[in-house]
Length: 424
Image 1 (cartoon, one colour):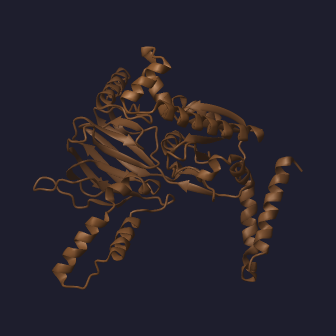
Image 2: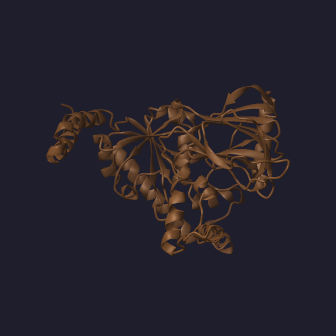
């Protein structure tokens, strides 16, 4: 028996004993559960090659920002002080991230796994092809970038939050494993986890004036001028390649794990477009933009677009009480309960193969209508009538989306992302 097989045997045995020690009422199901455990152990996390994709820290970003100015560290310190930023604080957070990345790499190498460490700016399709599995070392932004380039549903993607004190990391392993990654790795290799298949969004683009070349926004926000300049550069490249009009739908080379957002680049300008939901009639819209999310993204931006605050709920309940004469309680406990129940209804599971669209602040008059401000959909088509708009995938990849462009937004079983659920 090989070392790996022996470890799997021990893990399987420990879990079987746990089941056998359970209540007698579960005995009829023991055989089925043991089969499930054995199957899980066989398909455990056993990669030979792992790519570790690391985020760009704020310290690295500031260094890169002034790399052409030949600034010394002392000059950088003074510049940060003028902006009210702490050089020492940024350096400390950077070092924490570096130590946690080293911890991940050393843990993998002790298991005789070949490791390739890649900066997020260097992460490409070749890295994805090389790896059996990919670990995102950063926060949710890095995890979203890593996921966007993985198209093989059998290729696992894991997130490790390398700065849990400053980052929420909803898509990452529980934060305790940041400093105890060998323990997490052992559970993964023993099959003591559950695969979670997260549905993602795919995008087809067609029409006139199309530029299917993406602009990577990275973790740091580009200024509006930088964003527009980046799109102008990619448009010139696209025109040189004679890709300025697509008569057939073109599948974009990214997948959305959280959400797609369509709207004018200048947020104070209304976005003008036409929308068709589930092959329904086209409807002219003017709004602050359109968001379409997955179950994974239903806890993120979409949630914050649609959630209610207690003040609004209290106002509505007070009006309802006055209008109906009903004895509607206005206690703080009741208001909190109604608010929480509504907000919880906005969240749905990552495994669900449906999308949720939200029209932000729709303008409704005799010209523009909004029959449904939000709702579930299987297919959404959008025709742009914008002048300077973009379609942004997971807040990190931007596509130009101006007058004449048509996007068809759907889900496909092939696009599911394989991630893991590992309990604390």
